[in-house]
Length: 137
Image (tube, rainbow, N blue to C red; front, side):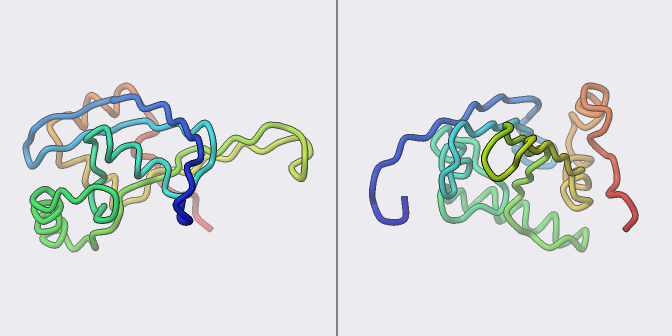
């Protein structure tokens, strides 16, 4: 952790789609943290050689980040760490009473990135809500 103390953490990582291009090396993964630790998913994906686009702290794949940055800039999309919490589920008990189960659609900028890949159509057929929009507020 931030204090240099080892704390057990587990993350289930499932590769859903990916390729070496076009436009660049990219994959879509499902990561399920089993214990909540600071930067856990970022650290575990970096160790497994699944760097997150925009990640510069836990995996410094400068070449891929620079290439994706140029692609995104050309589309008018600001590069950021492309990590998204699609679903948060908390078991009943404690301060959450009956529990909590919340889902959130993929942000538009990440949808646009996926649409650039050669596997976007396959991903959409398997995950029909992949390109779902945010509800109007």
